[in-house]
Amino acid sequence: MSLFIRGGTVVNHDHSRRADVLIQGESILAVGTTIEPPLSADIIDADGCYVMPGGIDPHTHLELPFMGTVSADDFEWGTKAGLTGGTTMVVDFCIPDPGQSMLAAYQDWRRKSEKAAADYGFHMAVTSWSKQVFDEMETVVKTYGINTFKHFMAYKGALMVDDDELYNSFARCAQLGAMPLVHAENGDVVARMQEAMLARGIDGPEGHAFSRPPEVEGEATSRAIMIADMTGAPLYVVHTSCRQSHEAIARARAAGQRVHGEPLIQHLLLDAGEYRSDDWDHAAACVMSPPFRDKSHQDSLWAGLQSGSLQVVATDHCSFTRAQKRLGRGDFRKIPNGTGGLEDRMPLLWTAGVGTGRLTREEFVAVTSANIARILNVFPRKGAVMAGSDADLVVWDPAASKTIQASRQVSRIEYNVFEGFSCTGGPAVTVSRGRIAWRDGELRAEAGDGRYVERPAFPPVHVANSTWKAITAPRAVARDMVTP
Ligand code: URP
Ligand code: ZN
Ligand code: ZN
Ligand code: ZN
Image 1 (cartoon, helix red, strand yellow):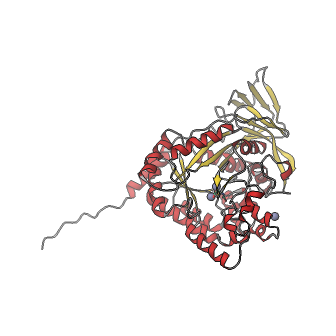
Image 2 (image 1 turned 60 degrees about the horizontal axis):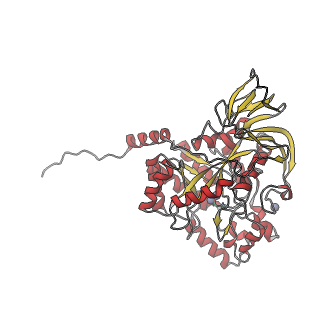
Image 3 (image 1 turned 120 degrees about the vertical axis):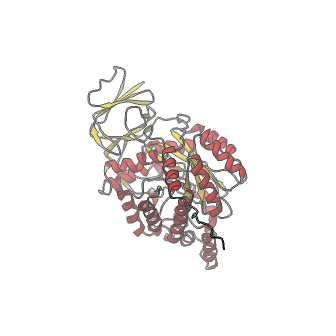
């Protein structure tokens, strides 16, 4: 099976050039201007289009049991939604039930993900600390190929871990060559603020936003950064939504720490005004954590992407139907937290980023695929249009236009938080490991086409961190004991 993509401009994170792409089986065989395609090759005409690495969404929750229900898009429909919008890989969060072993949770996630239509990997969540967790983390890294561990600093009474647990787990990550991830919000303060809102009679979705102000996220981000520094671990802050959190990350990077920040497409484009809607369902549809922020925070997030202090745009795709959201009528604390975005991230970011000059095409590739492929240690297998890379790519038509409508989406829910947004630029063809997965409105990928992607530990980053830590470690002062 070979595919020949002719006449496009290949865009990678570091350069663009006019080139054809020859795909053989599941990989890219050659990129250049003098390639002769085999007679049997299927030809894709990419004239006027950009040929870019398929998007990688490193933050999804497909079929996640959460807040008394299960997120509506499973691995089949979540990955199909992604392919429709040019995303060819997702990394989902494997979250053990309370008391469940990580190894059992991993098996559950492997079972659920068998029906994925595109490639996928996992992060593993640390939701408590024990000798068992310490031991299992090694198996997770060395046997399962998972090099990232997620920590929730919020969701008190459910997933939240405290500073002591963070310290233990981050130190273990440093030993194993793994990277800690944090959902950074001060869960103790959120819980108190939630009670305060209800005491004031605020029980609607706006109470969700009022009880999680940006300061709560900024403080937790700074705290996680400090703990990562003390333990010598790098750090990845998921869903960075506000100026306070971005500034904490930028300061740490300026001080030489390896810290990464991930704004979501939702926080870049939607704002807290949604919670003032007099339509409860509309406001509840937008309930996620952290909540949408005042518009002023968006400028900070865009600037972070432009300057490189924030590196990745994700979705945190965690969709719930209207009926599921209504579990929280009368008490905003019970509204399942989460919004969708897998299908729309790439066209929206192109429109609002490249279309406005905030991002170059190369920067678009960097923040949608190449940077996260490097951060997660799967580059250049993923995140590059390069000979030897997996043939995950998107033929991007800058003139394609679309208005987002829930009635036409692949996602299994009946609304879309981006309803009515117009996009200019979108995929003409999505290729997933050498096969045409989506073309001109027709979804060809099938359940089960995706493969699990293992991600090895990151020795170079950890060797650098631990070498520096050893050189700068505190030392006892040698003193001659003076006898009286
Ligand atoms: O509201 C959100 N973000 N739901 C998914 C779980 C999480 O916190 O990432
Ligand atoms: Zn989160
Ligand atoms: Zn709205
Ligand atoms: Zn999430």
